[in-house]
Image (cartoon, rainbow, N blue to C red; front, side):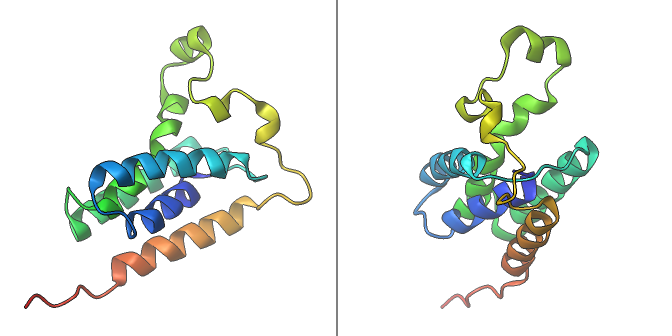
Length: 138
């Protein structure tokens, strides 16, 4: 699953969590569930890293560093950090996150969610939350 889609699931669960710690854990759990869903991939590391960085920074600026929304998103993308580790370290250890160890979980079969739909959906969720009006303080 691409990072925008993972981030969107983490953001959504973060809106329902009471604090950063439970949002982080829920985001990691959703990452595993997302990996088990048949899906396409984007083979462009710079797009993945760039969109993740922009999304995380925008969420931090909008919601603050202790926001469950931010930490849900961080938890949802955190397992994929292993994909940007130096090649020799990745080759020495193999995949670290459990759902990354089984290539058959990352299939692109006829029922797979295409990468373009993940970009569109993930971008829409992030954009919607970033544009949402803040509740007024009393």
